[in-house]
Each structure stands twice: as C-alpha cells, then as structure tokens.
Length: 201
Image (cartoon, rainbow, N blue to C red; front, side):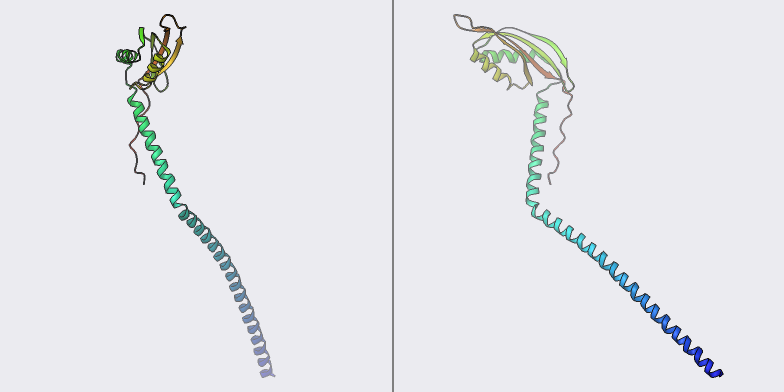
C-alpha cells in the first residue's frame, strides 16, 4: 500500500508539472505574440515615417532648382532695395542748405526759359522720418517751360516734392502765365543706413 501511495503522489505531481509547463508555454507564446504584434505596429509606424520623409525629400529635390531660382530673385530684390535706400539717403543732407538749392533752382529755370520773379525760404515741417523746408517761388513763363522745369526739378540731387502749384491765365502779347510754386526739400533724415549685403548662398 505504501508503494501504491507513493506512485499515486508521483503521478499527481507529474500531472501538475505537465499542466504548469503547458500553462507556462502558453504564457510564453502569448507574450511572444503580443511582442510580435507590438513590434509590427512600431515597424509600420516607422515605415510610414520613413515614407513621409522620403516623399518630402523627393519633393525638395524636385523643387530644388525652382527654390534656388526664387532665392536668387529674392536676394537680387533685396540688393536693389538696399541700393535704392542708399541712393535715397544720399539725396537727403543733414541740413536744409537752402541757398545751394535756390542756386540750383535758378539754373533749372534759366535752362527751361522760365523767369523767376521771387523765391524765398518758407516754414520747416518736422516728420517722423525727416524734416522739410518749404521754398516759395514765383515765376513767369509758358506751360512747356514749366513742364521742363518741373521735370528737371525731380532729377536733382536733392530729394524734393512740389507741395503747391498755381498757374495764372496767359497774358498777351507773349501768352506767358504767372506761376506760384512751393517746393519742399527734405533734410535731417532719421532712417538708419542700410546694412551690407549678405552672402546669398
């Protein structure tokens, strides 16, 4: 009887061990399946990320020439703007220098066959970016002489604008008109100087 009991106990232990091994095996297989599933999901996401990165790289390469051309155009526009900015600053001195400008007006009027009867400095207006001195002129001449004078005025080295223009009726016998002109000349510019152009590469 004693040996029979021992055999029975051994048999039960073997059965319990087999079930434990099977359960452990099932757990291991389940864990491996879950790990494989998670790895597949992570791999899919990584592949999708690589595909998007590849697509972006392909698009960038395809648009490289266009982007380089646009970059060069922007650099050229920037250089042109800086050049115009510097040219503008050169036309705006630190002081009004009315006498020099009045001398230039006399030359322009003589070239245009416009007779100056009177000219004198007017008021000073202060703006956020600069100041302006008004020059008041009274002249006499034909309309074509006035047009020539105004065209030459805009080409002078000094930045200026016509703030007032009044033309009287033509008077016989030469059909000349009396003309009142107010010209505002800019000075004391408060804009910063342009920085040197950067390397466009």
